[in-house]
Image 1 (cartoon, rainbow over the protein chains, first blue to last red):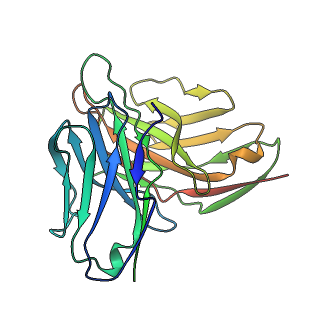
Image 2: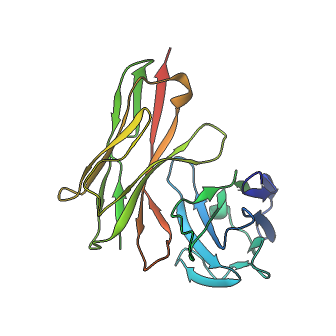
Length: 117
Length: 117
């Protein structure tokens, strides 16, 4: 396993367009997290899943944002009607959240850099 | 809610020297974890070191060690024998311990460390 992967790595879009990002976690990890990181800042939590269930959403996640993890494997994050303020790096992370082999380490992907013009 | 504060935006150190990065946090939780993550330029975030709050002994990983002062809510990272590859942004992060499972990370703003040859 090569780790957490994200696609695309870069996305440039015009204001008002919809965008979708994909995250593939480490295969045995049941927890998947989305964070947003703006330039010069630390990542901010958006949402996380345990298997296919979305367990928590941040208030940062407006109704224009939706995330899914339909089969408990990969996840998608969609932003509708993008705004310039959505420009950021979107990071995905995964971990082994529960069960006999609990690890609190979150493994991060390379991120998707979104630029909204 | 938890907060993590990294008040130093930038630091510089000579190769082979020792540097200490500061972090303070605020929480009402008694059971939690603290982390230092490293984000090299244009590369993904990786875990440097972690500390369980219930452990009094400071964590150590090779050249990296922490000074965990629970009463003062302080969690500093010491890098010994600094190497050029240590140049990166370093984030202090907090995770509440929820039963047997882990949860989201709350990050500080980060500090940019430059190692000079």
